[in-house]
Length: 460
Image (cartoon, rainbow, N blue to C red):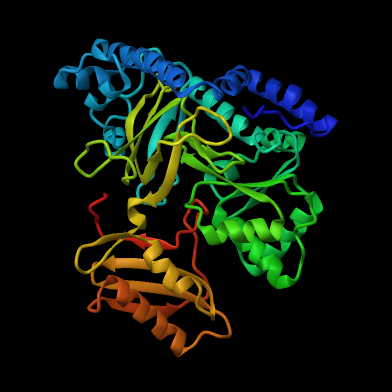
């Protein structure tokens, strides 16, 4: 078994991770430190022991919500579900799923009568209407601990110099004096991902070179864009001592991983989760996408609601076991992926996600009704000369709009290649509209989407 060790780091890093951050968490009423220590022990448990912990926590959660959460008390009574009948993890499948629409319609009824100090939170709404929900201190502590554990897998820790490229209004709106002081102490600098103009990219590159961070954190599209811009400017970024680039909140494409790794001279660690579902999975240095199994039960289901088979894609459902104050039980994330039955060479007993395919709106519907991932329309465009940036919008099943930010080599031949490539994949009768634009705006959250489907799919 590989022994997991925290970063030796500098004296300052050890003080930040061992004193400053724990004090910060204690003042906020979080027990993240003790939770992280427990997670660093349990990650080496065998899968059977982890499943035993999951079952124990699931039984406690279901008993609590039946007693103290109006929504679930009514749901269990209506469906005849008895939490006391849960004897194995598969019994969870008898609980109806929780959708975003359910949360919107029952925002207050989902609050536990024993909850104290719930904080309002929301998603960025990149795929539609933002979702408003509430979180308690237990959930926050466990989410922070899960991220902290995964950070330390890569021989870095809180307090190591960090550049964060992010665009969420929550983070950017919270830059008050206390937040700025905390970031200064933790040596973390935020670069806003809303505006990625050439002048802004020049500034970002200068800040990264000045900071010489041990780690980067951000959207894969944003870090890849910064990397490509540095390469275009002839500015080296692989001599800064960056150990790892943590990416999350968007699908990580292979070409983005290659670009970031090559230009920054570092490893790329993928992370999967969200404000609503929590930190679901993190990549370890051996390449495994490990589910935070101590806190989360992850299922994949087909369009019929039944468990997806081995190697089959399904919608990802999440039961967060630290959400008694505001439960997320069999929550429909809207994401699709494939679970992995193998074990990781790193030796951790945590289960794996084999593939995270993206959201339902990342899937394209061909004229004949075939549903395919957005990669099918990304690849015919990505490698063409003359394209600085692009976005594919499926407006109807027979009309595709392709926005192109051209460079000097873009011309009629490239445009025809796009049209022919998309028709070959989606059907000859599809109308492909190619339009040149000065820039492609990001989502309100700062994320970038290569593909946006406005067509309902069988996955949705």
